[in-house]
Image (tube, rainbow, N blue to C red; front, side):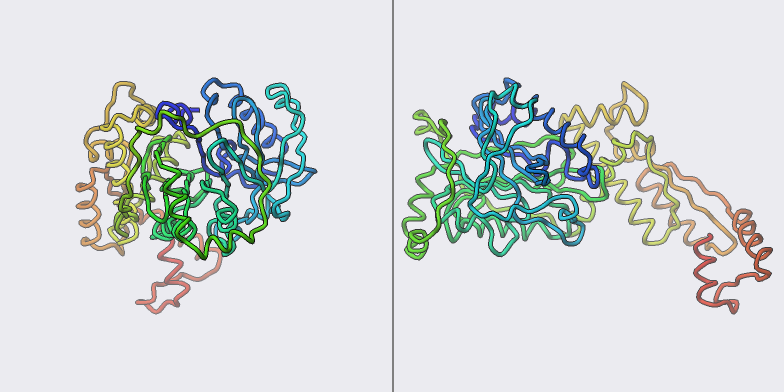
Length: 459
């Protein structure tokens, strides 16, 4: 609702949200539970009833059970009426994605069926059934078609034939997680989607840690005729970010008119079912409104991505887990040192967000440090409150690693502890020796590689 309010206040007439935004993308096997579907419809009912959703087309994501089959859907509504439920056609099922475990793809191209609404929605909309399937929206002034995340990455993306059939605005709701340099590919795909075929492409992506081990990196964007016109942030602690652009549909039409190969292909395309909408995205007063100009996408360097992405995930994980901070055994080696620097990056991001007026981040900080008057200003001072590092020395530790750990802790401001763990190490090795009759040795003293690794893990 906050995003819809902001979009309306900025003059938007169509609002697109990320994939499965109502329930959250990372529900995993909770998608099997009927409660997840029920609660999604309960939230949808609240959205339909809210004054904030009036006079703006709202496009939200949620799971929907149609004829006992679960689909990943977009629910598009206007003024307490559902216009279309559009199920996902291409499911992501590689790497970290397992959508085929929970959802079924919609395999009926350009086919629409009746969906019988649950009573909780019927009472709000007065509708018994709504269109469900692969269709597009025809408003008074343009035509819109939806894609969902993976469909942009597919070789036969729906936007290709939708564009040939006269769809001028493509929308994509994504749940795309952060991978180093992935943003480059995402931006190239969006811009190329409209470079050959013309049109406006709007992409909204999940942001933050969705209760899982992945970080979704935003990067909302708006593109027209192959060029970016609006760019959202990739790494931000803001829960809500709204991207708005004013564009001229005549620019799309004149761009397409000059591409003869596109027009020849368009004359032979099979038409999409159209859902007529008695609403316009433009009005007569828009003639004097300046349109957005193309911009150059500003990419982060690989080093910035490594520093910022995991830091944003750590902050989301910390505030949602309601813990007091992090504890890190800091050995002075590269792995623990890199982890410590990422936690410091998180502290820097938090202080920057508070400085920029983010009241939600400030409220979360005060809960974490248990101080209702605290305002984080210095990253090192905040780091000392939420980050404890510990150098755990044994008889095999060197003074060099101890000094490196101490120096890094001083530089980032963590609360640092030195302690000796020889007693604990000897106790564990002693129990092993008592049970097995053998005393493991490091490889420099004649031990095997297995013994060496085991002793390293113990200490």
